[in-house]
Amino acid sequence: MKYPPEPFKIKVVERIERTTDEERRKIIREAGYNVFNIAADKIYIDLLTDSGTSAMSDNQWAGMMHGDESYAGSRNYYHFESAIKDIYGFDHVIPTHQGRVAENLLFSTICNDESVIPNNTHFDTTRANVEYNGALALDLVVDEGRDPSIIAPFKGNMDIKKLQNTLDKYGADRIPLCMITITNNSGGGQPVSMQNLRETKELLQQYDIPLYLDACRFAENAYFIKEREDGYADKSIKEIAQEMFSYADGATMSAKKDGLVNMGGFITMNDGDLAEQITNRLILIEGFPTYGGMAGRDLEAIARGLQEVLNEDYLAYRISQVRSLGEMMDEAGVPYLKPTGGHALYLNAKSFLPHIPQSQFPGQVITCALYTSAGIRAVEIGSLMFAHEDPETGETVYPDLELVRLAIPRRVYTNMQMQYVAESIIEIYKRREELRGLKIVKEAPVLRHFTARLTPVES
Ligand SMILES: *Cc1c(COP(=O)(O)O)cnc(C)c1O
Image (cartoon, rainbow, N blue to C red; front, side, top):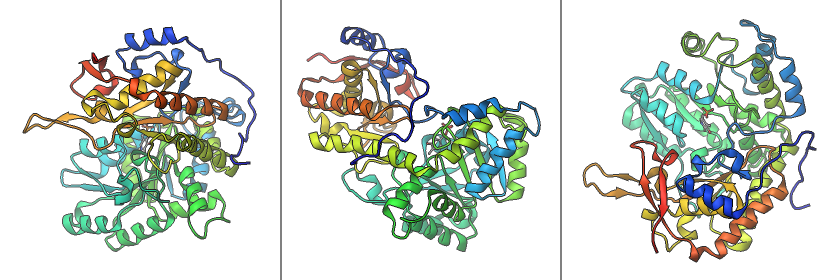
């Protein structure tokens, strides 16, 4: 068996609508050639994000019925707390309604205008929370992590030399903590090795700087360690995860990823004084410390999801579903970011559509073609998202990479649906020369990609 089949059977199904080509051409035009403006009911396969889109199990749904909605001390909180302590191993657990609130609480408590936060690569909400609190966010991923053509096992690793230089340059007093994101979401979902976590910890320890993990995809990271790093093949995913966390002093988590739920998060750490300060702030902005912005039933679903995500059959299926999509691209010569990471396929739009300049949004052109020809929703991560005017010269600065991300929701789509996705991409690739660029007709001053309206350029 080349790929492991789904380790589950389907008990409940959700109908998805198939629209006609003609309907989709009208829908994309009315949406201003921006897939964010399309009603989800008009999407056949939605690969916009893997965040909050997981399918819960029968066991999680059953847990929802065990929800205890007491304001204080709900039984589900205790289950949530013990599930997290069992895997992460830290002394304090603080629930939040999603990951960015955990980041907000952490950085608003520890940062000042002088602070510097190193990370392999800050996720965008993490960077925003660091910068909003006056601090400097530095991305110190290894060089190979920035090169889409290099195939290497751990492209999410922290560059220890760059970290040492950062310590020398700014001084330990200005660095309240260092973060590592597992897997490295903004770098393509690439994993971080155990050795790298250990070496980062050893260096930070000399300066008494705590290490926090941005742990949204910790189980996917653990699976890659088991597969790729010497000495871990015979360890369980849970043992690997426990060792990963043993090198850290705390973690922030969006349970919308490896928590296998649709909403939720937490922050967990050993430092009792910090936990107390954060808890006081939590009561102000989220809720009482035993629910932190979630219902009791949601806490229960996370407690159960965190146990399920450690299942090796699940992870083997999960990682290989993403990998097989990449291998189907290889067979047809479709350019993408290699190797595939844990949660998404990233098409390389510059090589896919060399005849369309970045000023005409090649990534967005592919995104629109995927919707129009197959009802698939992906997301552009390129010029539409990142191109900006240089404040001094007034010239437009384009990002190095022009990508289209197809993020795979957990346990939602079958391998046959993934094959449909692959065939749809290949069909577009074969007729790529017919595709024409786009231009913006309306845009917002910030985060324009969410609401911008575009139109095809005249050929
Ligand atoms: C999703 C994500 C976050 C933010 O979590 P939300 O639940 O969306 O607020 C932070 N870091 C990483 C790496 C993420 O993938």
